[in-house]
Image (cartoon, rainbow, N blue to C red; front, side):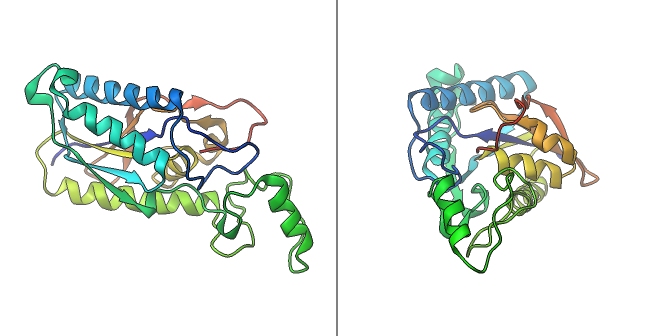
Length: 241
């Protein structure tokens, strides 16, 4: 059967509000983030050339602007024959955006800062005070409408990856890569659900902006990481996407 590789790309750095769970902030990439997206395109192009992989002509992206912008820059550069150095490597790739690739939702508390969220919970007689690790605890879900846990978001992303890659495996030529642009915490928790990371590793690792992690769906249905690096997380830091 065909080799099918997923390139998981965390969006570039962006204009993020301070002390605010970053999941669904609607802001664009900053200057550094534009560079991260360009670096991702270069890494993907180099990998395609070195490994003689084909590129699936559809890139899946989160709906959030920072992810879509990152995907847009990657796709525009990969279409550019000058960037690719080889007209045959320039591919007309399009972006498909999906809610399923979003970061963890904090529901009706979206884009409020940490103090505001904690005050809302404290003032609601239905709820107990939030645990100190509420933002980074993989299993904790805010008791608010529309909220989900980090594990929930990872399961959602993992299901999207599995369906997209299983469908691809039935129809493409050997050694094909598909690009997915999304968010660090959701990707890490998805990697746990897919059996790529151990649970303990979720808190130990992060993702570099614009540096793909490459995973392969094997014929037996299991997944393996084949290239790219996770970022070692500093101790006592909270998850951001």
